[in-house]
Length: 333
Length: 277
Image (tube, rainbow over all chains, first blue to last red; front, side):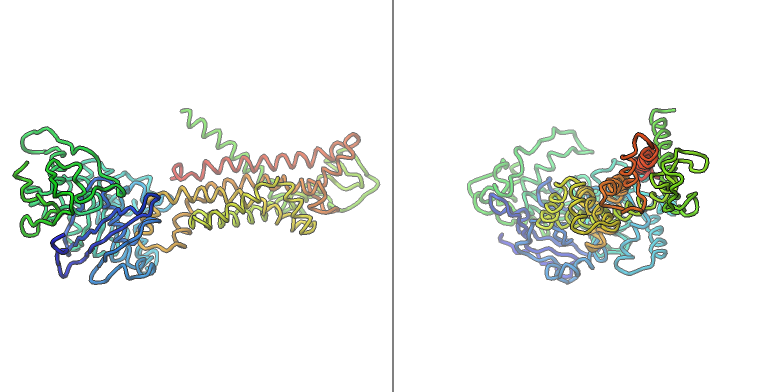
């Protein structure tokens, strides 16, 4: 770790050196290890990684909603200049839904089946602004219209099971937008949707950013979505960030062998057809990570010095990778 | 007509039947003083053990009281006891079950072990023990039956709450900054209330039965206050000479229990949010 976390003064949201661990019978499992990331105003930042890479836990820590048994070992989380980890549960509750909003993975189960959609979409107003119900309901109709639901007045009166998957996801986004949060955390919001619906939802996310200058923390395992939507991207592997940079730079000069593997394992829509190459092996368990570089067992470029902790290597300004061979990787490949 | 529509039409018919029976019982209870032809307490030694006739439609008992009037007034006791007992069981059980599920850990363990302790006694035995320590009267019968119901409702509330807690809408509710109490009341309660209401209707039937059993054993309603249970107990001694003394309250009890069971089944179908528009 030659370089300290990049200093990005005036960022809307910043996580610094965050480590999260679970206690297990086989010792502590450090599922998020020394993660630093930052998101500026109006920036869409992607966090990409396989399941189990720690991306969702990082988001939950930001929200203050870590599951039972998980604890933050070190680090800081800052929203708009305020340190979130120093706050009480009550103070964090006042921030959630107001200054930061969350769009969960599975919108199809994120709406309460027993409550009308309009009531749920307007709920943050009632919760944080003590707004009377009829006012909140009017706002809910406006929000449903803003996420391009047809006939929002009627839709607001309906129950979630009367909505299609894409409509439920829009309703969730509408709920997240209710109080115009500074930060929107979206956890794979398009995974459960059809490709066409997915494109509409991504378009909606872009509109939100453009209209409200919302900072968006976008978790996904889909490189296509990252390429399409994000400004900058962090690649996570086995609990740590291994490469970060602007999206076009990362796609053009992927420098960590893991990022290169991810790209090679993803079909390209345009350009010549090439055989997909899967990355051999699996993500190591948090309790069984190798010494040194955590990718060593799956890496074709591994050398002896990979057995000690890898350094951050600056590829170009704003683009760096956690790999001793990062600058040679593209030559080797 | 599809098989499903056919099935739902039949279910609908049964629900209607249940509603009709329950309405008759409840209305008789409420309007007993106006619809009963005689006072349930008036003795008339001239007409002891008289068979059903024009003057006494369902006959008279061993001291000449009108059996129809007593059966109608007995509905009052049954409905009152069942309402109160189910109220105690439903409220207590829901609070305990939801808290256990939501808090988890030690709270869950302690509360549910306590419930299992209660559950491990046969219902009648537990009722008899409670009545013996509380004293025999109708109020204590209501309490005893209510306490018997608590573990059943608690288990159901806990199970429903646990499955609701797995749902993402609870996480979504937390993510907009909802407090624990609001999550319980607003997000979880509406999602666990359906099975509890169905259970309540079925428990209602069981409460009527238990009250009758306690009164039959002499622990519930005390003579001369009429209850189907103590009427049955009296009728037992006159089975050969005056079978109507047993048949009438027995049938009333049977119909009442049937009605509440049909109502419970019908409610379950009706309250399913996926079938509701």
